Image 1 (cartoon, rainbow, N blue to C red):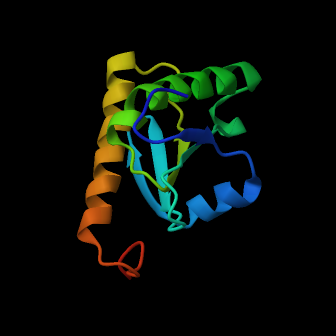
Image 2: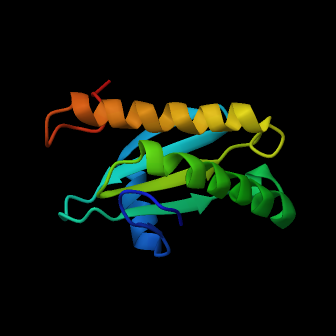
Length: 130
């Protein structure tokens, strides 16, 4: 996707999306970002993008995914962690949100997920029990 210090590919298999759904997540404004450490020793970063029918028809969903792909292209090489899978889920306002605000949402989510990873000891639960 870009000239990052680590290779970046796309997530394409449903099983990979489901695995990321069980990992840490950071909802921010118009986007929800899920991050999963594959722990396979690879520096490869994989990105997936999704938008449900709830946000609109095909045209709106495609526009939402295009905006998320571009935001990820700009920010993941700077803030992504090698060996992780990231899934970007479009929320309702992603197509109408100003570009700078969308970039801030994605940046904030990636920073939060990286900080969360640094704080948690290995093997701890993704979220504390209620």
